[in-house]
Image: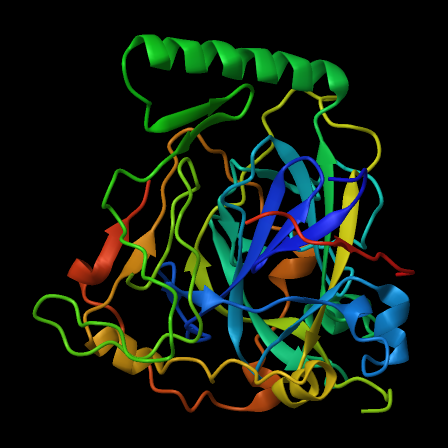
Length: 387
């Protein structure tokens, strides 16, 4: 991969340093109460903005990056599984840090921490707004003031999602690679592969035991087979890739002329139990400058069709039907992890329902037995722009 290049591999964004990010469709949580981790219902499709010079809006082309389609009030989470080397990853929502609540920065800050460490952090479902909890990412249009960006900064200028990765510095990376080489030799001498990948300075990243969470085949839009004794599963809105060996734990349900964009940003929905882990690498372990960055534009399904000529994914699965079918929700626990304190600026962000009104999608809480514990060749480089 060229220095600083970000590429698309299927539905995965590959950032320099081995960072892999997927955007996952999911069930939207109620805006009251605290809930388990919702399932993954397939990946959002991703396209390079520069591949549509005649149909992508001028502002979008100027910022470069990639785009994906989202419905009003659709929820998503970010999956970091498959990242091959430790990295510090900044996640911005409208150029507000989703971890610290501070303005977007070109450098890493430890206090308050403005990044997550991957692959130690297997996923991020929302903003760091509570102790041991996050508030779910939910798509809303710009202009209402409902986005995190609008509530924290008082204006809505950017929208979308921003990602920026920092690898280990040369010294720490050499040490980590040597430790990984020795670990692999020890495992080989024992005659088998361990189910735990150890990362120096980060603790253990648990891997799912074989068969723990079955992954579905790529969806064709037809309903998947029902679970034993369960009702038929709703059609999944897009397929999720099969988990690669050594991947992070999976949360699978079961297996025109240019014009102003219908820009979308991220607000918040319900609260869920999820920790944002504190960086335990020694201070000074990370490179001083980012290896790569990318702007992720969120567009409405009609805008997606106009720009790309492709049909957008179907609307999200009805969450009550999902739960009635007996399908799984998830709970993730890492005994070695230390949760970051909630960000003050993010703790006061109000849910999108305050702007959009009551949620008409009926809620049905999962039964206790439905909660499961979880302990292709690169494509063309993605053009960065001015943002």
